Amino acid sequence: MPETTLVRPSFACLPAYVAALEQGWSPDNLHPHQTRLRHLASIALDAADFLDGLDGVAPPGPPPDGAGGRMLPGFRRWIWDGDFCGTIGFRWQPGTAALPPHVLGHIGYAVVPWKRGRGHAKRALAMLLPEARARGLPYVELTTSPENLASQRVILACGGVLVEHFRKPEAYGGADALRFRVAL
Image 1 (cartoon, rainbow, N blue to C red):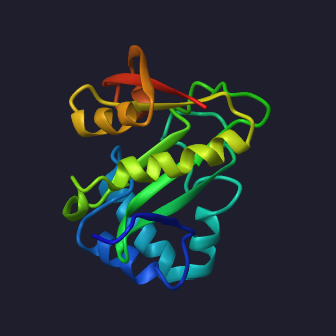
Image 2: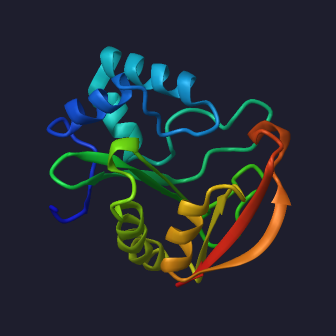
C-alpha cells in the first residue's frame, strides 16, 4: 500500500477531489449533500479561489446556521496515498487553546468510504499534530459521536483522552457527542 501523506490542495490533485464529490462523498458530516454541491459549484465557478479557501485564513463556508461567531484561522490538507483519500482540517484561536462555543474541535477529518479501514485517518491525524504544536497549542480537541467507534479508535491511537460527554448545540444537530483531548 502506498504511504499516506498530507498534501496542500492543488490543481494537480483537484480532479481526484472532484471525482470523490461526484461519487457522493462529502467532507461535511452535518450537511453532506449541501456541502458537496456547494464545493462542486465553487470549483466550477473559480477553482483557484476554492483552493485558496482551503489553505487560507478561515475554513470554507460560514459556520452552520444559527451557530453564530466568527470563523477561525485554519487550513485543510488532503489525505493522499497516490490518490485522494479524504480531508483533514485544523483550526485554532490565536493565543489560546480554548475554542469559542460555536467551534466543536480543533481538528476534523473525513475519509472516502472506499479508502476506510486502511489507517489513513490515524496517519493523517498523527502527521497534523506537529503543526498544531508549532502554533503553540498545549493540546487539541476533537469531537465525535458515541456511535463512531472508528473515529474514536483513531483519536485514542494518537494519544487522545476522553474529557467529556456533551450535547452538541442545535446548529450542529443537537446530538450526543464525545470530546477528546490530545496533549501536544
